[in-house]
Image (cartoon, rainbow, N blue to C red; front, side):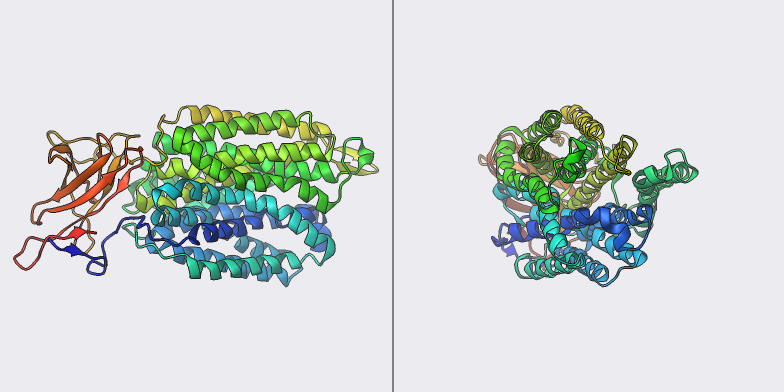
Length: 598
């Protein structure tokens, strides 16, 4: 039987990782992630000066930071889904282009409203993080995927950590608008590198974009995150705060009901409700809380005047340099994560990371009296947060279908954004309520700093408990249960092997020559001795999952009524990582021949 090339079947879904991506893909995507993450902390060094710079009240100036967080939270699942449908590289370039436009808008204005619009466009680029992870999933060989995803996932913290000293240096020696020109330059450079080195993946999710679902989720998130981030200014019991929270709950419940009935939902809530996905997302919120706490506390502690008795009296630049090891350490632990996860699994690395975070915050209670001590705290927390962040995409990817990678990682990134928003609101409230007046000015107190560290410790311990209930597995990516519900699952076939969560083997789709799914096709796994090692039935979308009894060479055979049978060789390493393998069936006819995918 002759091989059928991808050119002959333009509509088929090839192996999501064709193992031909160039060596520049990982650093370019990581650079893109760092670039968009810089937007979150770009203005932190000048945050106290924003009311004067924008000629507005302090309460209104905070919208410049809030807009970025809100836009980032909204964009991540939407851009992830658009990437799954239309091409992840295309949507990555679109995200970076929006960021560049937002940066240029901010660079040329001192008007508050225009600045908020520009900052929202900057935040919208956060969708690049899940898109980059999805491209890595599609393009990289499995042996490189763990460390690459770890670096991309950690880029959120790396960008935030490295931006602090760089932005402080620029703000201290130049006009603050230079920060936005620099951000625009980074965006243009990232776009150019993406065009040159990142290929467009051919994997596409079926269906269409859920516009109603996107609007509903956006409105619900804005109504939820807005009172969380502004509750300290409005009052937690005010009508605006409580009314928006109640509105958000109503919208999100209605949105959830709509998504469950939608044939092509923005977020597959049945997949999201799966234990491993749900617990990973809840843990992500806690890690987000822990990450943002240190970014809020340490810079303020370092810059407070020594006359307070506890402030360290450092300049803006020195404060940024003391916090910079947070991002650097996160970047350096990515290779360590890959080795640890390969031996023990991402669950263990996630729990170890959160344990290190808890120890770091606990030690921080007594390490606040000298700048070098804040560096120690930053290194410890960077190591823990880096391990935790690196583990999250592996856990998510192992639980979803390859065509859902972008949307699933977008939702996970959203959970982290919710964590940072909650952290910003709660710790901001704590610092405001425990402030002390010195020289007629209210300043954060040491009591407030310590309570903030305790809150972060409590959050990460809750995350540690949640992670303990994740399924125990050593595989970094495991096959997903492909039926959307028990009612939708294909009927069992005598002797068929049912997909087992946490086990390795093969998964993919059964397609016809035009790329359309072949529903209810039989898929048989044959070992090197010609014996049947497994049998299953593809679901309504042509998806199948087969467990392999051990590593070795196999043959995957597909058959369905009205189609000529198809067979292809496949190898399983026995390492717990599922192998993606699609089968293409040709319609039975004298002029058509069976296709064997390469």
